[in-house]
Image (cartoon, rainbow, N blue to C red; front, top):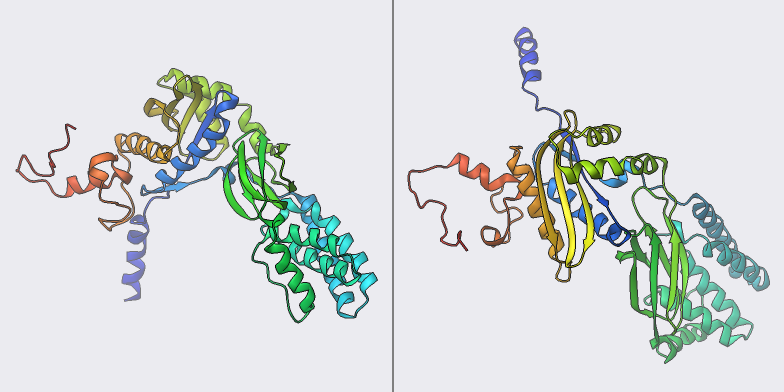
Length: 398
């Protein structure tokens, strides 16, 4: 029996599935106006590639890195320590020492926005600082600190075991007051554009963007763009509009990639049979296949050139050119998925890994969408009949 098992092992090894192809989408912006849209296009196309069997999609974060802000991380660690020490002093009723330490903690935390994923420990430090100001009778300053706390987290709860009833009442008074209802606008920009913008821990869009209705007070803003170091700031919003502009710091991997883009963009637009520049770039990124594109602003939208490439041979497996009409109604995601499905289905790749016939279907695919993951193509191969009207809905010509 043991000999039989050993004899079967080589056959089982031969039957193992081939390793997944490493794929990614890369879009080269041809002008500053296209930087933000190129990042979103890459994301939508990578989502579409995930529907295909045998693909290991590598996102830009994996290709170029998304390093944290080490200085901000160090400030956050010091701020946490300072807050802990100030709480210990506060609980011992050593209020002068507590205020001294919490002031130092707040100063550190102002520089820690790039490492913060929520308002802790900044919110806790602001609450403690406001309570200390209230204890020594500086009520107006305490209200200002509470305004910042409410702007950062409107639902932050004060611990009744630590803070007095009077102070908790002051927080309610500030939260329901007229000043707390005021709003201000903030414009957030970055160079290059296309960075994800997180405000108080929530993703709100991509740079450049205007936030028209933020509560008056401090807000945590964090910027993330693959290939660049994360950046954060503590933004003070006032009734007058404010603006923040940041130069992002590229990684070494992104610099090497950026140096190849002129050659790659030329090959995508010219659509030759061999693409040595795409091959060199893809190999440096460790890819087997890639959807590579260029995008530029034109009078009536954005002109997008796409090519689907086999990296080892440099062969262009398919291509598309289209003029896109913006994204006012959220149509860009669907358009990117449609184009990826066209390119990959035409190249004969294996179909989606899901066996559920209704998986990822909304009921309108036959009217408006391309074959997601090659699923329709697979079902047609499995079930062919002699009926000429089989699989015909009557709407194809429309």
